[in-house]
Image (cartoon, each protein chain N blue to C red):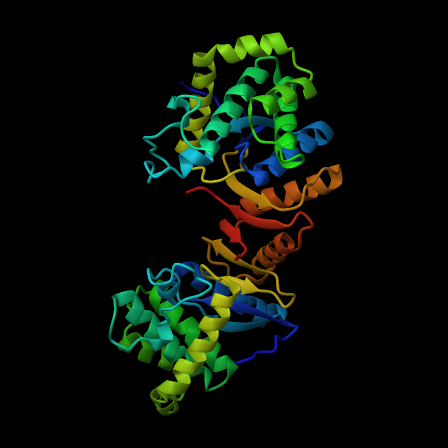
Length: 212
Length: 212
């Protein structure tokens, strides 16, 4: 599977399990709606990345998209369910994909819902999707797993270790962890400019990380 | 041992084993000489931080300053020797401390010297120290170990995990890893402004980290 990188699109790798990824996707959504930037939503699995059978995250042997539904721990089941559902939602178009992703993230982190079947159905409704089409696309399980596999392969090739990780059109990439939800366009732009300035600094900044 | 934080001084925690710490100390040196900023050199031990007997880096049980000289692995011996020597150099004044620290770092990372007795003596000479006074201060081993203990306790309380870690006068702190040596004042100022802007961002940035 070869993907030709789009020279104007920033990719954002995220996992529905992660509150920092939620803030990152909200940031991307503000920037695309209010500043005309382009982002592509892509999935990275923290359960896969941290799995004991994957000591080398760039060469996993345990893949989330190969796991049966309803098996494994709660995080594994919730993330597989969410990724497959988000893939089904995206079949209704790019805006539908964003609406579903944001609805599911907000259910999880604003309303503390579990990522279960009911929460997925609620997100389908909140996002304004066609529920019958969603059910049909979700039932096409091989297509959903293939799409997830593409994201998981891309993220492991890149060495993604946490979410959100943004990949700029020029190939620069970094995990960005921040604690305050940013929904105001000016603040979003400020944060984004700072982040990209770090990635483009002539000093070759690799990491800025607070001790915890 | 209580240290009152100086409201104008940035602390830089470093280990002589680490090339990123070398670049961080060079950066601090440019900023203090050419931009009038104040930095205090402080020691953090990577060997201690990564020691298997210290699973919680904020509550170490294995301390480098308690180890006998000449025991342990090559990294342990080199770092203990370097820290004690740097402490002896600093007894000749703040400028002497900087000159020795930079001389030892440059010997290690520009000339690929080992951090052995000969390299320490070469750094004493390059730094223009009084060699007899240096020998006398180095022989006061309890004082040297006590000073090292103060730095190691401060760094573990802060949760320092890598070097260089800067602690701003306002208490904000972060590891800063960059790959390009910065010795030009304008570039140093640009990097420093970017780093402090990240630490003061209203978004509460905790981490920016490239995948490797």
